[in-house]
Length: 551
Image 1 (cartoon, rainbow, N blue to C red):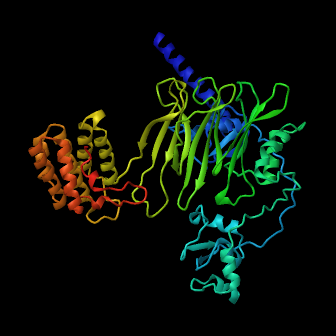
Image 2 (tube, rainbow, N blue to C red):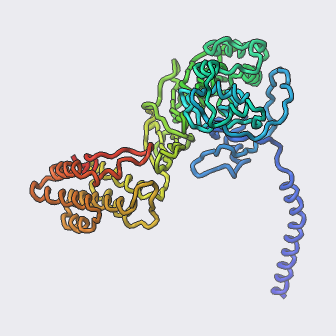
Image 3 (cartoon, rainbow, N blue to C red):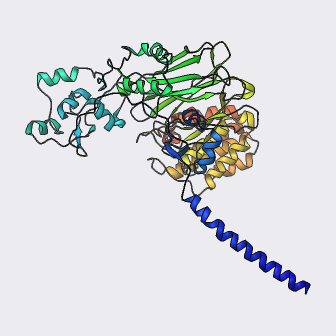
């Protein structure tokens, strides 16, 4: 009877659990079908969890709780990701401007080939497309001098011309010969006037006048940061995704300070000049201008808080200029010491196509490190490339300095040999074994391939790796292994270099003298090194003295 009673109890318990499940399931389904109230935010260049939190007024913890899909291993946010921001979106008062006149939709466009004497102005005049629209349609043609090169193809974002005169102007073979065309070709590109009536909006006449004008706006009774942002947008001084009005606690954990990043609305886009203006909240109310930074290019605020956890607020930003094939960003950090802002990073770290993130990756109690990933130049002449990550740390509260550099994984044999060469170059710190292991790994990895235009690239690079193994083995006291590897070299000039190195060492007993004699051999036999001399703009050159680098 006891056993039967227990069975009856278990059956009853099972029925009760099933009943509860049926009651709870609709509630779960209902909850899934009713997501929390909020709005979407699209991640922009330079965004971090911290500045999205500042911008939206939602804590980092809440942002991560509502967006688990956006939590990545390195703590980065990816440009273009959509975040759910709980609550109602901030109200931004739009500038009062007349709506633009309706225009007929434009076609996809056509190509224009640059002719002798062409400038952006003459192309704009010939195609009836504004210079600014031409720039937007052709970012790969931008350079600091605003030059066009004969034969370049310019994308025209408009319907193809139909009149005979316009067709001749767009023809690749047409040549400008009139005096008017010559005069237009000699005319420098002028900034495009903003469409917004800036004078009516009370905008400053010069870029230098913005810091004081912003302070005056901040100190107007009843004005909010949203009002300021709308006014700056009306003046054409804000760039979507690159500039903003950011609240920050800089003087103390409770101070309501403001950081404003703007760009010169009168500047042409490739020559845009940015500015960072910092305003401190005054005890008696209102704001005072505390710091102004004018950039060489567009300034993007990365963070405005205590990044390195030393009890002092920091400002981190980038200054970005764009060339023909890449945009280069320079990282800057300043720290508030109670009296002024002090430079808090060593040097001027600059990287092409850079993305930034903040994450605590070191065991030391140094707050967040600044992680910079990029380095790739979008040019067919750049050669084999791989991106890399630089980590900048503020150890013990000291100014940020480079702590590590880590390259992305590559399938190029050339990159593996570059890495081995770096280890050989640091033999004084780590000995020769790390370089030996790296060269041997490059020889043994079947996944490593050719990535450039050198004839017989893989066999040449492998024989070069073997030559460097000869040098490393002998310098490490392993003469037998050095001779065995030398016997495997097939390329005649590199085989001669290995034989020269071994014979010189046998005669002199000096690795340094053996390298000197090998360099003399290389100068007389360029086939031993010239295949490494030109691997594109993004890679180092190579000379005879680089063949045997121990000096």
